[in-house]
Length: 225
Picture 1 (cartoon, helix red, strand yellow):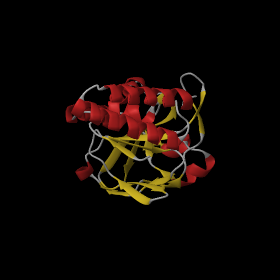
Picture 2 (cartoon, one colour):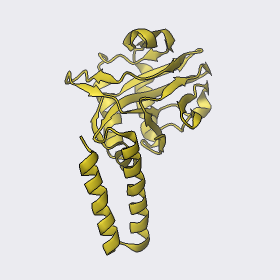
Picture 3 (cartoon, rainbow, N blue to C red):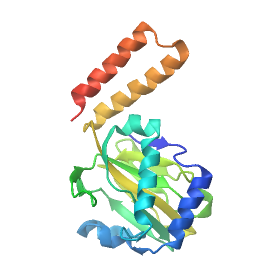
């Protein structure tokens, strides 16, 4: 499921995040990639040993964990620490698929990557190029969102970042291990949850809505791991 999560941050919050990132150090992004991905990765990355990094990463995660649309779609069990990248002067990231297993640098725990998430921190009018291209069974999807918005998509998707030909593109990114490993199950649960919310707003908590809500939670109980 490819889903746009709007307004994770307000414009003022984005500006504060961006100023901190722009003032900080940046290192070669290829250093954090696997052997194959490193050949396709041409960007800069905010170092995880920078003094500002822990606070920045926690700010991004906390904002998403408060967003009801994100919670409904991802059903997160674990969220890996967020990282930050910067594309400028033709920087790009060629076609790749994210590693299936990654290690949480804080806990050392190995996690399965079910869902990838990118939070855009640069205004789309401030840079040329830099579209996130996600390939799935329905074709190619070009993603270039307002600053403060996020996109979530399956980590199994082939994707890339097109060259940034002017300006700079700064974003936060991470991976999620979901409570529900199966993508189709997550999609059905999300659609059911969205339908329940809409019906509840239209007709209230009727006996039928309560029963359907019970079905939602029983399916979540059955499919979660």
